[in-house]
Image (tube, rainbow, N blue to C red; front, side):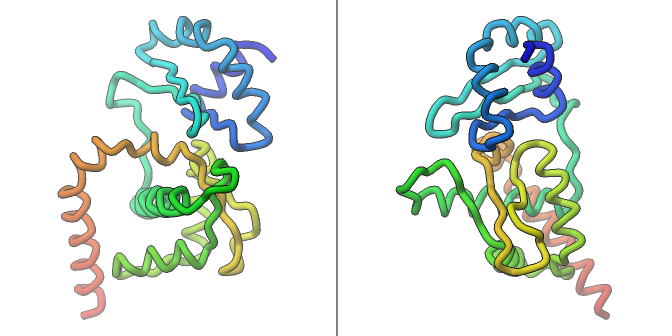
Length: 189
């Protein structure tokens, strides 16, 4: 494995969690070559940050706001739900603490609490999961056709939506959710 291969991976995926078996070797290689990776990215305006235990994640952070991932409405909502479920499950976990899994049913329940006009269907969930997997935020462990299908949520959801960002955008999010609710009510009429 080469540093440029790991650098390219980080550039395309933003996060490198140790929890995914297929990424573990790449993760530890990056941990052992952090300074070299930092030298590569610094002139481009990026910082390579290593979050040690309990997260065990390497993150590529851009100093400029313009180069952030653009998620659609349902991807954003699911990311928020995954963050919430991750935090809830993480509190209860005492075993290994590294692998947080939820079921499609649990995701559906949280989604329904939002009382949005459109329900979360399988097609929307699968599309969102493809995007979130691309950023190493979550991945389906089973086919998403069943309510008992499992989804693994990586600790990167904490880093993708840090507390300071959530607090700053809470009011804006509530306004947007209210717009979606109102749009749904108008569609029903």
